[in-house]
Amino acid sequence: MVKILEEAENDLNRFENGVANKILDEIEGQLEDGVDSEAVKVIQRPTYDAVFHRLKLAENGLDHRIYFDYKDSELYVFAVRHRDKAYTEEDLKESVKRLQNI
Image 1: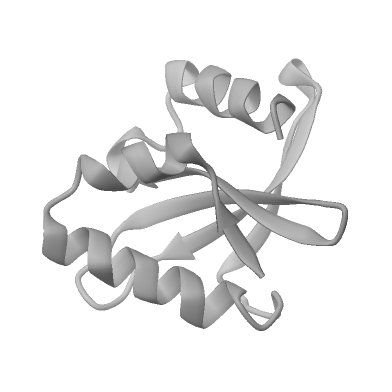
Image 2: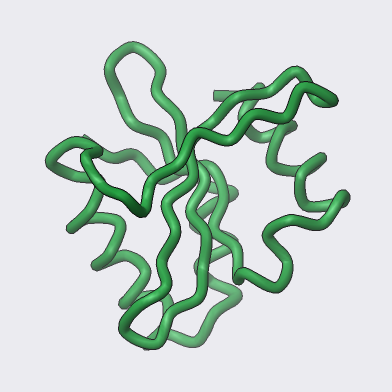
């Protein structure tokens, strides 16, 4: 089961409804039944002492990144970003902070 943290829901609310709905559909479709996709990559950020998963959404008019990780066999989505902002220093700091709160 995929759980979307409140912060990730807030991220989704920043997008237009149609875009947010497409993102949710992709999250459910690609993550709900387990992760076995070429679009998923393990992200390692030694500077922040962080390792997490990233789902790359680059089809159906989307160019977004979904950050998620596991805890106690549950999958938690903790950040949803447009590609343009997904890899900034500020974003990485915020995402790692969220990851630590799972």
